[in-house]
Image (cartoon, rainbow, N blue to C red):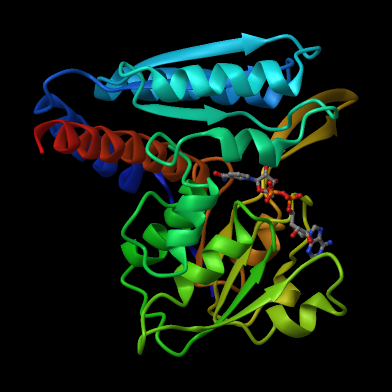
Length: 294
Ligand code: NAD
């Protein structure tokens, strides 16, 4: 079997088109403020992607940079200011943050009405009850990608390799959201013994470990749907020349011979995640304007 590529570009384009249409009906354009504390190169690259994606749909974007020496109190004070600023629609904080800052306290200080990533305690709590609020972007992107191929998850064995609070845990809740159409999810993580034992029997494997080539073709069941969330920067040497490239957590070539669908990295989940972020900005703006009217 040769897998079909489950690319993110079509889904991402259609989400962005809808967001652009919705935003054009708002009384004023929404504004996203992203905070970067320090100078992480991955975060800076993602900020550039956010900026151009926002521009494409009519969202105002601002990247606020703080030096790595910024104290937790200073960062939280700034977030509180943004919470109270009626011209700010959505707020997010890039990770990693410097070691002296408690990431969870920063996230908890973002008002759930402006929490564009859906990871504040209130929005995470709402996820336990239903999926109707602002939800974390990457898990939602994964769910939308699976839906885009009309794959019926009901009763299927789904292995999620991640227990992280931004990916694995919310994704497990989303998978269990439907009363009688849910799959049977298994959560694997760093302490899982014999990962292949789980992946080999899975109809769907979703991996977000941040480990290049963690999943090889021989660890997969024939015909599995494989969603690769991982983003890893690796060095490659060819003809004595070193170069850096982005790869996922799945060994692409071997998995292509076994899976039925496989998301590429780059060009898969990441593209859809950015589009979902914009969708969340649009939803927050819609809720804001509705509150003003009531
Ligand atoms: P994290 O470090 O918080 O979580 C990694 C998870 O993988 C943990 O639960 C850990 O237990 C598990 N894990 C690590 N090594 C493992 C192993 N050998 N076997 C089994 N489980 C293992 O990271 P995160 O912030 O959740 O991000 C994970 C990956 O997803 C990173 O590569 C990140 O860059 C990527 N990411 C991608 C997107 C996207 O849109 N594509 C968005 C966010 C993060």
